[in-house]
Image (cartoon, rainbow, N blue to C red; front, top):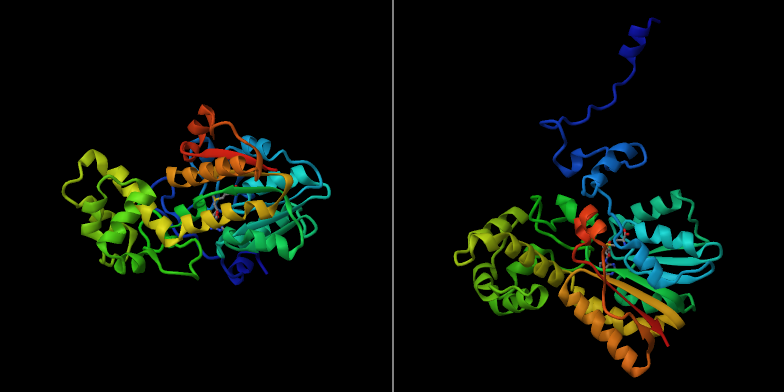
Length: 345
Ligand SMILES: C[S@@+](CC[C@H](N)C(=O)[O-])C[C@H]1O[C@@H](n2cnc3c(N)ncnc32)[C@H](O)[C@@H]1O
């Protein structure tokens, strides 16, 4: 058989969908970024340009977090927000040999991918277990294993994988169904939540979750309405008269943030997590928490200060730790990050 005839007989691989222009624009088209092992060079270029490659997450304040946790081989601990596993991979390196990391995340879509990624890097069940759990329940995870932790780490909020994937409906930058749930198998989507929320409640949520100065006006316009997509909601916010043009971008960010926090009951979960810390940590055990807005940081700060006063914590960080100017430049998502740590008495 000639080579030509052989080629005719072989089934052709499916063609990659073409995108317009020089570079892919949409999340799904960025196929090289979704496969960082095969396309390391493309991924490195994206990171060097200050962007996060599609389907991944750049860990924030890595060295500061590791230092705050004072890790050593043989330690047992929890990464309560496993995400892409960036912090977890470095933690695992530092607690081996002999250590054990429980990696928890409530996201049923990303968790199996992250577990596979970490297993592929050689972290077997003897040192790493991935659990789909809300961090409100980490005391139970530890009690079930009859252990207390040397360290607990949490990097709050959403991952870049969640934000950047239009089908998860988190961002006004990409059109998608208005969902915003980190665990889409539980609770109401953002569309349903907004449709069922009255103006008084929405106003409170906008103030408490995002310090929104135009809370009353926005709540009157949006409460009880059904928006099918992130773009529809963004357009409705931008069309509200009475908000200055130069305020509109920030307003969009704050409204999306406030609704996301409400839909995921983020403050309820954070309060429960903070209350559970004394039961999770061994004497001398350390907790480090990265926050991304004032509502989160206020809670962590108050909890640590009260714990120090009451003798629950032996030491807490002196002020807040923020990202270096270099990191802020390289990864703009680090700009709002604040790190605090505490040591169990
Ligand atoms: C900022 S990302 C963590 C990124 C991670 N440190 C890394 O290096 O890849 C936050 C993660 O926390 C998860 N998360 C947020 N709230 C949670 C909660 N209440 N319980 C469990 N996981 C939560 C999100 O699903 C997301 O994957």
